[in-house]
Image (cartoon, rainbow, N blue to C red):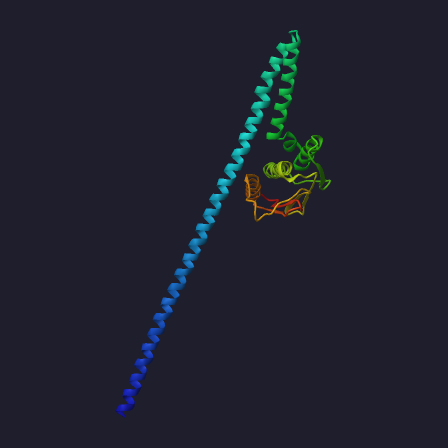
Length: 255
């Protein structure tokens, strides 16, 4: 009987030891799991804060740049342009071939300044919105003989937001400038559409294209990506030799 009693006692002690060991292991595993979750949550919070800080810096950079452009545009239009006009009026009262040439030169400079001012802060964009501003831009490009532009957009456009419109306008400007500089293209196809939730903008030239694995992204591409990111959207550039360059931009309407 004693042997049986000792065996039972041994079994209970062993079972208790195993149970305690299981509790310790479970507690350690639980504590490790909780610690891991806290680390993951902390990393997520850090990533979220870093993303928010990056977005704030991006917004400050873009908005600051646009404020500077607007300030320069106003300075050119309101002050320098006015001063040149006064000088012109003074010269008109004089006579002589040199005076006539000077007046002609001032007229040309005034027109150039007006053009620069409109490029820095397009008045059509502020007054009438994105599509009218793009129409105006495309007319100027075509009249300069740089490119033929096929523009596809809805007849009615109710989505007006000056910050978003200005960022999208700058993206199109950047793409056109790069096309003229590098693409050796004769035609651009551009479409702007919306579905109530997003704006979709697609641009494609018929130029020489390039190998995306061999060409580093330049400042223009980074500017496009930054503006799309600023709007909470995406910009996807694609190209291959002989196939032109395409850019697809998607941004939410509730920016």
